[in-house]
Amino acid sequence: MLYPFIDIFFQVLVNKSHELLREEIINTIYGMASVDFNTFFSQILPNLIAKLEITLPQKQRLQGELKFDPDLPTFSTNISKLVADAAYFKTQNSATAIRLT
Image (cartoon, rainbow, N blue to C red; front, side, top):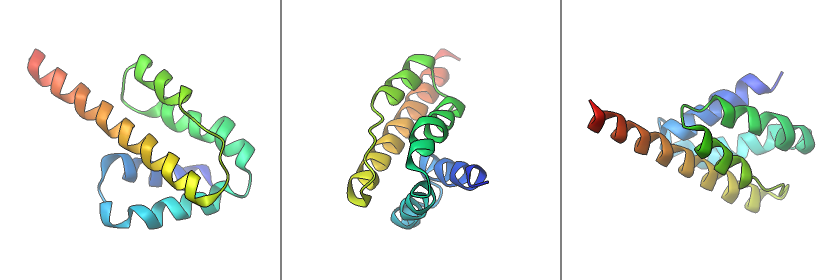
């Protein structure tokens, strides 16, 4: 039931559409994830990464960097890094696509 909300919040973070609310969004994701961290880190987060419009090696890199840290400060830092890397990969791929056309 929480997956659709986490999915939307994750997409908002990656697309940087509500950057001023980034900390609040991450805190909200943390609240939802804290219900069952095992499911969040083993199923939900990998599914969110799989849906990103980036290359397979980039997805694998993000997956490899996932860390199971249930405390809020570390969780927040790790999600921020994950989101920043995903946004970078999307931008990098867009720039490459533009140069190829």
